[in-house]
Length: 211
Image (cartoon, rainbow, N blue to C red; front, side, top):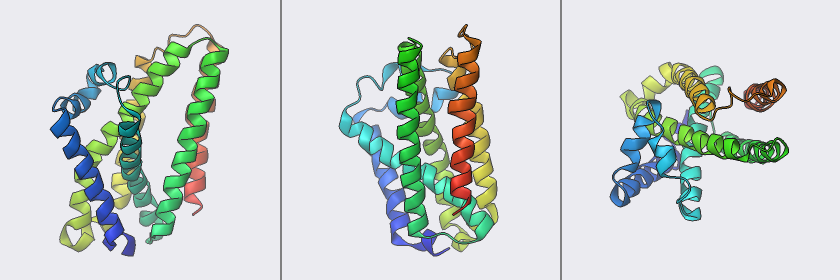
């Protein structure tokens, strides 16, 4: 529990709030369009291609911090403990996971000559992670700082499984919007869905669960 009472945890949340505030100050349409991601893909079509490297770096750091916190809720829920070291391990593992997955995607896109689909999927996935972080940020704030974190102790696992459920639903939406279900190569579909969606996430869950 000490991690969630630590100043570093608070700074992570403040950093995300500042990042979102900066976005609203510079582009008032971005976050509202992101919230609409469930019903349309205007956000993906409007952004990503024009984003600067600096924005992508800050976006990745802040978004991954929120995803890491949600995963830490799972570990806290089953073990009753969490530390800064464990959180850093989660963040590093997620970074390696995303890097390897993206490199593999680009390679398969080149092999099967489907670079357009891969790029569309990549943009959709980035939007998905940002959307989830935005939706769960207020939830994390409420459970972390209400009733001396009693809500966090009681609801950490429930919040994590809610995160997993929403992630799966939106992952299917991203796959559908990327036309991956319409590719004529059945073998490629099976290889992708099992090799790059199901298996890696199961492996990631296994690694984190062993902490």
